[in-house]
Length: 416
Ligand SMILES: Cc1ncc(COP(=O)(O)O)c(C=O)c1O
Image (cartoon, rainbow, N blue to C red; front, side, top):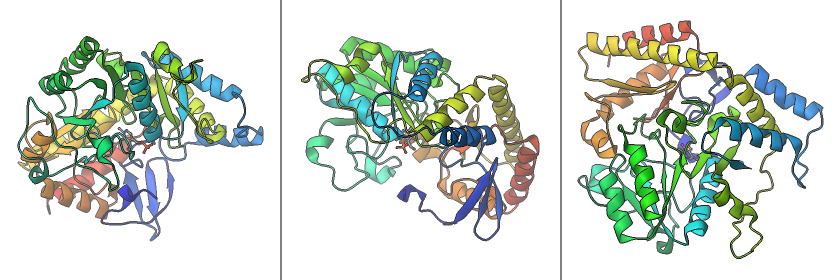
């Protein structure tokens, strides 16, 4: 169970198809949560399910010995589509892949310290589990150049771990440099777009500046594309930004809802996984890594996404939803901004797209956001009932789904 799923209203969902999810009381919802975003092609996509069933019919199995042909095929496809990825390893989750990226960075640089973003999420393990949405009382005023204390998202993280973790504002190169001057930093680990506090994009030139400063200080740049990967583009957000990180981590949409994570990047760094010298070798292991069901799903997903019309469809639906929402908010005289990258979107109830978590905390109307989501859910439009959570459109949402969503939004705004 993921306790991130414990929310109010706490609905028991029983099944899902395409753009729809259904609860135990027989209610149907147009889904914009997509299970925290993996279902880029919608729920239970027939081609993906068919690929998984075919893998079972053909007796693919978890051999647990040697490399499988489908694992090799998936690796080939991933290296083809992601610009910075020369070689990959497959895991089950994004958290695992990020853990490997951190260990690789530490082994490559011989350094222990890491820079992470305030408002970012990179999984549940000790090195990254800091509060994603801390309150102003917890973090105090915006610090730049500077760093924030590590506020653990979990009990049980030793101080010997947290003393190596440095939290800075997103879109703030001065703070990155401030920390780099003070500590030997193994890697900057960041989502290229912060998609766990809505859709908070990098400012013009920010990712390129990060890359430059990392190169200057001998630090690795790691993009956590678990949310952006495949959703923003088949080559990840890096292909849109034109910035090549040293290492990249993918998950979620890569297998359209089947459990799969990817760590990939520069060959010389990735080769540490197989270094002949045991003192340099970085451990990668996992009984279920590259499990055949997930691997089959990922291959089928990439094959579908090779058809550029899928991204055109996602963009068309996204821009239709955005324009419709903007009209509704402006008709109603509400202060709201729709931030969107392709099929990922978020409504911020403030007059601009925020630049970092402080900006969200200081300007976004959290109470209004909570009421907005609750009313939408009560009327059959499912957004995750937590303020600032990203919305996700799938390629099988229809123009009618968007029209119905706008119609319902129009109605609930009268009562908000
Ligand atoms: C950006 C980002 N990185 C990493 C993770 C962790 O991935 P997983 O839940 O597959 O371990 C998530 C999950 O929400 C995420 O959004």
